[in-house]
Length: 133
Length: 254
Image 1: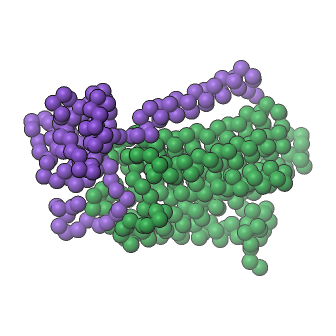
Image 2: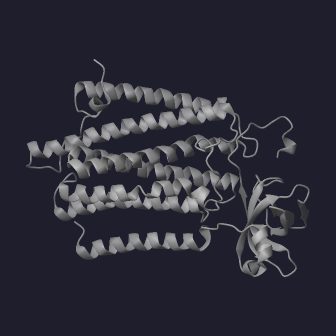
Image 3: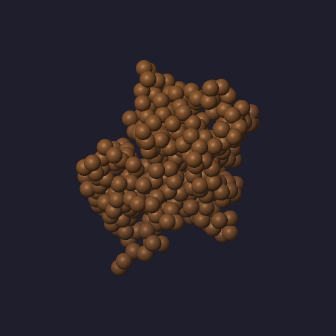
């Protein structure tokens, strides 16, 4: 038998848990990432830590020391990203990715975390899979 | 004589035979799905073998929706007719849904680790699914709490009525979870099979997925029926022998 104080505590914990999820969800989640267009239109937004999402521009990916450099593009807008740390294995050009970091005053987005978005299309690996788009 | 759907939930010889047939069907479908998902379907070009987690993750999520649909329908039926049978269906549905939602979150998390590069993200789909799990865990906790508080049994009206209200309200979250990837910007990909214009999926992958969903649905239906029969027995036994309702011989699995 759960007595009244215990019950109130249990409801409180459940409500607090739900509230915590909802508030943390609302802060970042409803726009999980910003697009290059949004960040370029209002760079002040990205001075603090944000997520930036777009397609990794083919041909832009290269390594500079311990940095991974690439451009993220969406709807014609493009931002160069300096990523510190190794991206996941599934990260490749042409695929969509979300990076976490901030926009420097020199217009470069400095990130330290990459998440790879993948589409809802599924196809077998072809023989010439090196040029997978 | 063929067992109809209604007989399947009855604690009779015919019902038990029907449930046994259903269990064998579920077992067969599961084996077929495991073969199709593990060997027939090719690994995905972009994601590699990690994509095979889809054959666990997607059925778990879909059948969890179905289970919460059972909770909704049975709760409405209980609020209208106050038949304790419907309350048993609602409780069993919630139990199955909670387990499957946890399984969907677990497999999804591992899949996310392998492909996205993160175990968890504060993304609309993931957060709404966690809320769904919390809601129906709360539903089961509410039942337990009311049962202990009233000192009665789980199927009593004082327990079943508030539970049914929550069982109806909780379903509001299901469309939020399902459409979260369309309504908000999300890390999670959008639906493939349930999309209005289906994006390309290799037919062998589609077959494996459909087999896995069919297997999960049939197995979940089996568990639901067994659970309802068991809850029914539990309710009828204390009435016959009210001396010691807490200690009973374990119910025979039909």
